[in-house]
Length: 267
Image (cartoon, rainbow, N blue to C red; front, side, top):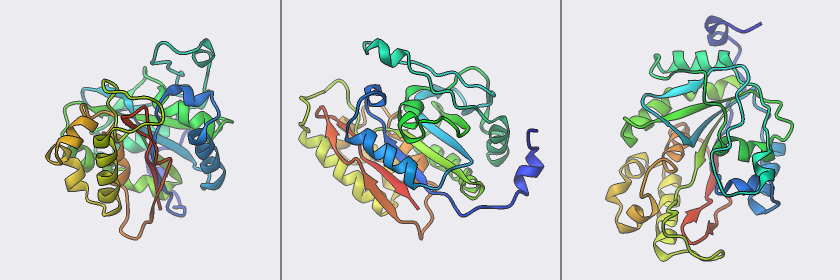
């Protein structure tokens, strides 16, 4: 039976869950063995098993923030030019209408329900390696195109209570992401390396003000973040950090010259 909002609000709390930001990179990571997928598999085994997963993906942008609220979200293949094997992939995790209702309540209904989107590759290409059994309910939150980065941070902070409910909140994007200036595999442009390092330092300092105002961080920032949809999920994750939380980086490589896979665990 589906829990009511009142039951969820007064449910016993669990040890506070970590938060993740994942540089998801190419969807091909879902079906190839590589160091990134190996780390995702390791984390799935080592992290506390969540009661549910809430993912903010770079690949769902809407007017007004939304949360998937269906029982059975479809697996969305939102890409082209990849092997048929990737299009055949399904990630049959159930949704969680009760979690969607809790998110709406926590954000004073600033996040509203969606019954059509599903799970895009920013979510399932990572989770199929972390939790291959697809036995954890998953919902996605969209990126509201009308919000400034500072407003995204404020909205993210409304979700803090989810950590006490056994929920794993995950942002999925890439801090450096400029597909118009790709390089060879194994290379990194100087500006990509510069901004990746600067952002890592600001993340460790929890300097959300500077990170949200990335356009003031110089030419390297502008080249690294030509559009913000892959960058904003990182702000959602960092906004949920507590002062006592450790922040641990993993998958800190740059691929194809201009895509940073840098990821981190909070808590």
